[in-house]
Image 1 (cartoon, helix red, strand yellow):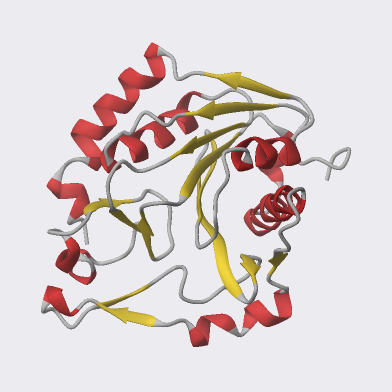
Image 2 (cartoon, rainbow, N blue to C red):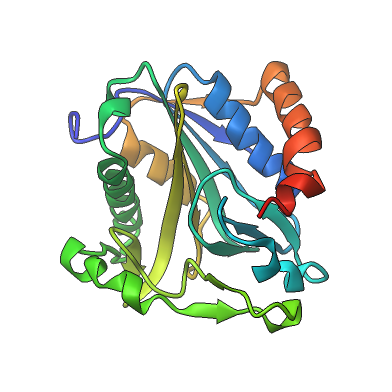
Length: 242
């Protein structure tokens, strides 16, 4: 890491306005498209939601439509139940030196920063070691969604830790998924299964960079996000893409 921190500078967006699932995903993508410096956005969910990875079949999650707001992520991975979790979207623009690092290296360093942030309040978490994680894919619990009446299954992202996830007392508490484009890298992550205090987001951000700057989503970002929410994330064609 650079000077014991991942980023030289980091813009922080504390965005707890209570957006819909589609708008949350849209703001994350808009941030990827527009950010010119490394940025992290923290947010909550106003009602129970379920996000699922880009390649997950809709039939695997359709049974939850009456209970949760569903949204397909642009990033990969399996399914994540959202409610009381702290969710974040981290963006590394293509003009930043860290963009050239491997996705797995970035994933691990971000999670090590989270472990450091938790340690500040005496909570002992750990990054899943690579040798243990290599065996994890074969053990991933396939969670059946019987309400869908489809026979499809999908991986519940928090059922089993995999490569360099964060665990506490043997249980996964943080994982993430990524998308890399010519504009930059987007990592969407969720922290759950523990008491999340009000200062965790700030400690996490400052474990990533010693030079953090608070930002607010500007009109340009929100306008791009609204269009993405309307035309992409809120559209049935996207939700049922596969």
